[in-house]
Length: 205
Image (tube, rainbow, N blue to C red; front, side):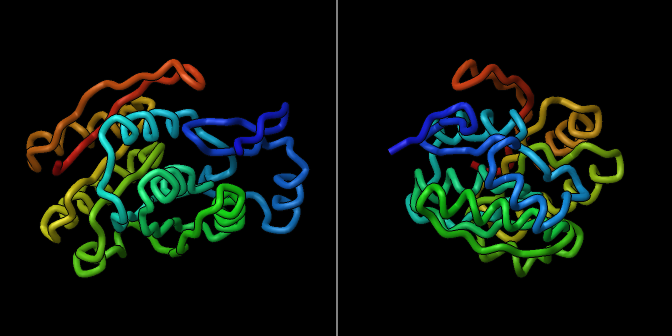
Protein backbone atom coordinates (compact mmCIF):
# COMPACT_ATOMS: atom_id res chain seq x y z
CA UNK A 1 0.00 0.00 0.00
CA UNK A 2 1.38 3.42 -0.95
CA UNK A 3 1.12 6.05 1.71
CA UNK A 4 0.17 9.57 0.72
CA UNK A 5 0.10 12.51 3.08
CA UNK A 6 1.48 16.02 3.32
CA UNK A 7 4.81 14.75 4.66
CA UNK A 8 5.35 11.94 2.15
CA UNK A 9 5.54 11.55 -1.61
CA UNK A 10 4.36 8.61 -3.70
CA UNK A 11 6.42 8.01 -6.83
CA UNK A 12 6.90 5.02 -9.12
CA UNK A 13 5.63 2.65 -6.43
CA UNK A 14 7.83 4.09 -3.67
CA UNK A 15 7.03 6.07 -0.56
CA UNK A 16 9.50 8.93 -0.02
CA UNK A 17 9.48 11.03 3.12
CA UNK A 18 9.77 14.80 2.91
CA UNK A 19 12.41 16.59 4.97
CA UNK A 20 9.76 17.88 7.37
CA UNK A 21 8.61 14.36 8.29
CA UNK A 22 9.30 13.59 11.98
CA UNK A 23 11.33 10.50 11.04
CA UNK A 24 13.59 12.59 8.81
CA UNK A 25 14.11 15.17 11.54
CA UNK A 26 14.96 12.37 13.97
CA UNK A 27 17.46 10.84 11.55
CA UNK A 28 19.13 14.22 11.01
CA UNK A 29 19.51 14.65 14.76
CA UNK A 30 21.02 11.19 15.08
CA UNK A 31 23.12 10.99 11.92
CA UNK A 32 24.03 14.64 11.42
CA UNK A 33 23.82 16.60 8.20
CA UNK A 34 25.20 15.03 5.05
CA UNK A 35 28.33 16.81 3.80
CA UNK A 36 28.12 15.97 0.08
CA UNK A 37 24.58 17.06 -0.81
CA UNK A 38 22.98 13.74 0.15
CA UNK A 39 20.62 15.60 2.44
CA UNK A 40 17.31 15.47 0.60
CA UNK A 41 15.29 14.10 -2.29
CA UNK A 42 16.53 15.36 -5.67
CA UNK A 43 14.07 15.70 -8.55
CA UNK A 44 16.41 13.96 -10.98
CA UNK A 45 15.52 10.74 -9.14
CA UNK A 46 12.22 10.93 -11.03
CA UNK A 47 14.14 10.85 -14.32
CA UNK A 48 16.11 7.80 -13.20
CA UNK A 49 12.98 5.90 -12.18
CA UNK A 50 11.01 6.96 -15.25
CA UNK A 51 13.75 5.82 -17.63
CA UNK A 52 14.21 2.51 -15.81
CA UNK A 53 10.47 1.90 -15.78
CA UNK A 54 10.49 2.23 -19.58
CA UNK A 55 13.81 0.41 -20.06
CA UNK A 56 13.83 -2.15 -17.24
CA UNK A 57 16.77 -4.07 -15.85
CA UNK A 58 16.86 -7.86 -15.78
CA UNK A 59 15.05 -9.39 -12.82
CA UNK A 60 17.53 -9.96 -10.02
CA UNK A 61 20.18 -7.66 -11.55
CA UNK A 62 23.13 -6.71 -9.36
CA UNK A 63 23.05 -2.90 -9.17
CA UNK A 64 25.60 -0.39 -7.85
CA UNK A 65 23.99 2.95 -6.95
CA UNK A 66 26.73 5.59 -7.03
CA UNK A 67 26.55 8.60 -4.72
CA UNK A 68 23.35 7.09 -3.41
CA UNK A 69 22.24 9.80 -0.99
CA UNK A 70 18.83 8.62 0.18
CA UNK A 71 19.23 5.60 -2.09
CA UNK A 72 16.02 6.03 -4.04
CA UNK A 73 17.29 4.90 -7.44
CA UNK A 74 18.63 1.68 -6.00
CA UNK A 75 15.54 1.15 -3.86
CA UNK A 76 13.40 1.51 -6.97
CA UNK A 77 15.51 -1.16 -8.69
CA UNK A 78 15.17 -3.47 -5.70
CA UNK A 79 11.41 -3.06 -5.59
CA UNK A 80 10.66 -3.05 -9.33
CA UNK A 81 13.20 -5.63 -10.53
CA UNK A 82 14.09 -7.60 -7.38
CA UNK A 83 17.59 -6.20 -7.87
CA UNK A 84 20.43 -6.89 -5.45
CA UNK A 85 21.47 -3.33 -4.66
CA UNK A 86 24.67 -1.90 -3.26
CA UNK A 87 24.33 1.77 -2.34
CA UNK A 88 27.67 3.59 -2.43
CA UNK A 89 28.47 6.99 -0.98
CA UNK A 90 31.58 8.72 0.32
CA UNK A 91 29.53 10.16 3.19
CA UNK A 92 28.29 7.50 5.63
CA UNK A 93 25.81 9.93 7.20
CA UNK A 94 23.45 9.26 4.27
CA UNK A 95 23.15 5.55 4.99
CA UNK A 96 20.56 5.82 7.79
CA UNK A 97 18.31 7.71 5.34
CA UNK A 98 18.87 5.11 2.61
CA UNK A 99 18.27 2.18 4.95
CA UNK A 100 15.18 3.88 6.35
CA UNK A 101 13.66 4.31 2.89
CA UNK A 102 14.60 0.76 1.93
CA UNK A 103 12.79 -0.61 4.99
CA UNK A 104 9.85 1.73 4.41
CA UNK A 105 9.47 0.27 0.92
CA UNK A 106 9.97 -3.33 1.92
CA UNK A 107 13.40 -4.00 0.41
CA UNK A 108 16.96 -4.52 1.63
CA UNK A 109 20.08 -2.76 0.36
CA UNK A 110 23.76 -3.09 1.14
CA UNK A 111 25.69 0.12 1.88
CA UNK A 112 29.30 0.77 0.89
CA UNK A 113 31.33 3.80 1.96
CA UNK A 114 33.76 4.51 -0.86
CA UNK A 115 34.95 7.23 -3.19
CA UNK A 116 34.46 6.84 -6.94
CA UNK A 117 38.17 6.63 -7.71
CA UNK A 118 38.56 3.75 -5.24
CA UNK A 119 36.00 1.50 -6.98
CA UNK A 120 38.19 -1.00 -8.81
CA UNK A 121 37.54 -2.80 -12.07
CA UNK A 122 37.51 -6.06 -10.11
CA UNK A 123 34.78 -4.72 -7.83
CA UNK A 124 32.76 -3.43 -10.78
CA UNK A 125 32.82 -6.87 -12.40
CA UNK A 126 30.42 -7.99 -9.64
CA UNK A 127 27.64 -5.78 -11.00
CA UNK A 128 25.27 -5.95 -13.95
CA UNK A 129 24.35 -2.25 -13.86
CA UNK A 130 25.69 0.98 -12.38
CA UNK A 131 23.39 3.95 -11.80
CA UNK A 132 23.95 7.43 -10.41
CA UNK A 133 21.69 10.44 -10.01
CA UNK A 134 22.76 14.05 -9.46
CA UNK A 135 26.34 13.11 -8.70
CA UNK A 136 28.39 15.21 -11.15
CA UNK A 137 27.84 18.63 -9.58
CA UNK A 138 31.49 19.77 -9.29
CA UNK A 139 34.13 20.10 -12.01
CA UNK A 140 36.45 17.78 -10.10
CA UNK A 141 33.89 14.96 -10.22
CA UNK A 142 33.90 14.73 -14.02
CA UNK A 143 37.17 12.80 -14.36
CA UNK A 144 36.54 10.25 -11.56
CA UNK A 145 33.09 9.46 -12.98
CA UNK A 146 34.38 9.16 -16.54
CA UNK A 147 37.16 6.85 -15.37
CA UNK A 148 34.74 4.77 -13.31
CA UNK A 149 32.46 4.41 -16.34
CA UNK A 150 35.41 3.29 -18.45
CA UNK A 151 36.43 0.75 -15.80
CA UNK A 152 32.85 -0.51 -15.65
CA UNK A 153 32.77 -1.05 -19.41
CA UNK A 154 36.07 -2.92 -19.26
CA UNK A 155 34.70 -5.02 -16.39
CA UNK A 156 31.74 -6.13 -18.47
CA UNK A 157 29.02 -4.13 -16.70
CA UNK A 158 25.98 -4.24 -18.98
CA UNK A 159 24.66 -0.73 -18.31
CA UNK A 160 26.04 2.45 -16.77
CA UNK A 161 23.39 5.15 -16.46
CA UNK A 162 24.11 8.55 -14.95
CA UNK A 163 21.40 11.21 -14.68
CA UNK A 164 21.69 14.93 -14.00
CA UNK A 165 19.68 18.15 -14.39
CA UNK A 166 22.24 19.21 -16.99
CA UNK A 167 25.04 20.94 -15.11
CA UNK A 168 28.16 21.88 -17.07
CA UNK A 169 30.42 19.18 -15.54
CA UNK A 170 27.88 16.50 -16.41
CA UNK A 171 27.47 17.77 -19.96
CA UNK A 172 31.22 17.57 -20.43
CA UNK A 173 31.20 14.06 -18.96
CA UNK A 174 28.45 13.02 -21.34
CA UNK A 175 30.17 14.44 -24.40
CA UNK A 176 33.44 12.79 -23.44
CA UNK A 177 31.74 9.44 -22.88
CA UNK A 178 30.07 9.65 -26.30
CA UNK A 179 33.42 10.31 -27.95
CA UNK A 180 35.58 7.88 -25.99
CA UNK A 181 33.24 5.13 -24.73
CA UNK A 182 30.63 4.89 -27.47
CA UNK A 183 28.04 6.03 -24.93
CA UNK A 184 24.75 7.79 -25.55
CA UNK A 185 23.89 11.21 -24.17
CA UNK A 186 20.38 12.58 -24.43
CA UNK A 187 17.71 14.74 -22.83
CA UNK A 188 14.94 13.18 -20.71
CA UNK A 189 11.88 14.60 -19.02
CA UNK A 190 8.84 13.48 -17.09
CA UNK A 191 5.72 15.27 -15.88
CA UNK A 192 4.64 12.74 -13.25
CA UNK A 193 4.72 12.50 -10.30
CA UNK A 194 6.41 15.89 -10.63
CA UNK A 195 7.85 17.86 -13.51
CA UNK A 196 11.53 17.13 -14.02
CA UNK A 197 13.94 17.42 -16.92
CA UNK A 198 17.60 16.74 -17.44
CA UNK A 199 20.18 14.60 -19.23
CA UNK A 200 21.11 10.94 -19.25
CA UNK A 201 24.50 9.43 -20.04
CA UNK A 202 24.06 5.77 -21.00
CA UNK A 203 26.95 3.41 -21.64
CA UNK A 204 26.29 -0.19 -22.60
CA UNK A 205 22.79 -1.50 -23.27
